[in-house]
Image 1: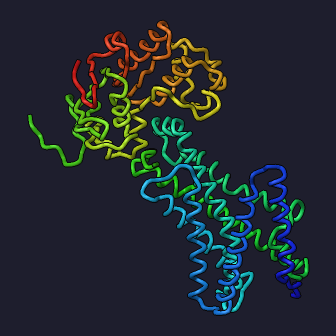
Image 2: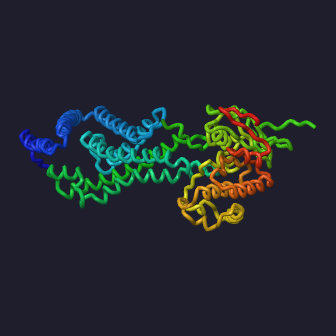
Image 3: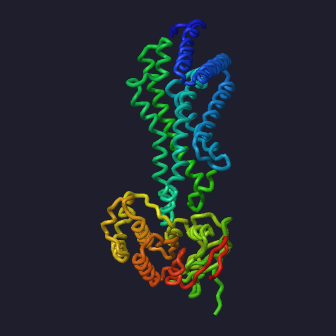
Amino acid sequence: MNAIHLGTWDLLAAALLILLDAALSLALRLGVHRQILIAAVRMVVQLAIVGMVLRSVFAAASPAATAAVVLFMVGAAAREVATRPKQRLKRHMNYQISVAVVACAGFATVLLALTTAVRPDPWYAPRYAIPLMGIVLGSVLNAASLALDGVLDGVVRERGRIEARLALGTPFREAIGPLVRSATRRGMIPVANQMSAAGIITLPGIMTGQLLAGMDPMEAVKYQILLMFLLAGASGLASVGAALLAVRALSDERQRLRLDRLR
Amino acid sequence: MSFTPQHGAPVKSASTPLLAARGLSSRFGGPFEFALQAGECVAIQGPSGAGKSVLLRMLADLDPHEGEVLLDGRSSKAMPAPAWRAQVVYQAAEPAWWEATAGEHFNAGQRGFVDKAMGALGLSTALLDTEIERLSTGERQRLALVRSLAAEPRVLLLDEPTAALDPDSVKRAEALLASCLADDMAILIVTHSAEQAERMAQRVFRLDQGRLTTA
């Protein structure tokens, strides 16, 4: 690959666009100039740190350093999943569910890719493992939080209907079934939309990056297809896992609906 | 005559009540101690928030509780929860519907009973195919009673089942329930109406601040 090297002046030239945004905000009295400037500085600092960390992790090529970065990413994604829904489960069950779902869905798909399709040497090579985990976790985060929110929010809204069925002797699984299905569906729809739009409405970010970095378009497309499959699989696992674990946390051995376990 | 019951086996004799609550309590009230015979109706009265609905929900095993409830001398814990709730049916004050029309809540085997019960309540069977949202509150309440009875419960726990009904419909509902009592069902009914309690129940309990007393 022969990427065109970007120098400091190239970035500074592009940064003029940020100043343009700020100027627009001032001229049109939008009141977002401070926000945009702060966000731009944040973005630059965050990415610079990530770049430096990844450079040293790639150079070290040590399993421990790779594992540390991956675990940090999983933890951050799980925290996001746990805190997004409005309703929370008592005793930090939101967190327990999120960690379990994010870790299982993330590791399962990334390990599959590393051992079958990509096959770097060694298999945990950070240059492959870390970016793969990053993009998979993005989808997992989205799917799991949508499904979790679907159950926790839906169960409050649907309480009457679910308990009406329980009261007539319907088993819990059957009474909660429609809610579990709709919550799981909610988690899986974004990745389905993403797949149908790929290439026509948007050029996926990864592919754009690889094209800019000088990769042959067909090679970039193959990578993108592989990634889409990984994201679809991870989203499915995450949605189903989050919905089922949340429902389990809201029931007990007598098949009751335990809304008292919501905060 | 005396005998030693086998451990764990349900003890059934002429004096075994159909439904019995023993030390039934939760943080919302109790302990409750009472029994219902087959064919008996007991009314529960008391101010709003006294825990009447919670008591019914505990009996149906829909809310966590201490103590036990026995059906024919057999503890609710001794059978799967759905099997218990199919026999001890709880009808909420505002019954919910999960399908688009009332008719979809019944299976083919229940249709004969549903037609008869709707006739007894003065409801046209055309209502079965009407969307739930388009039914009146009173129609929904009577259909909910049909739905509860169609489950063929042995004990029926009713929370204000006729609150939204006109006097004639109340009379019809009470007559239908009386025929169920004659068939050995037991009914526990929460009602604000002292007249209804008097008309239907052999005994009236008063529930106040989580305590049950005989009125």
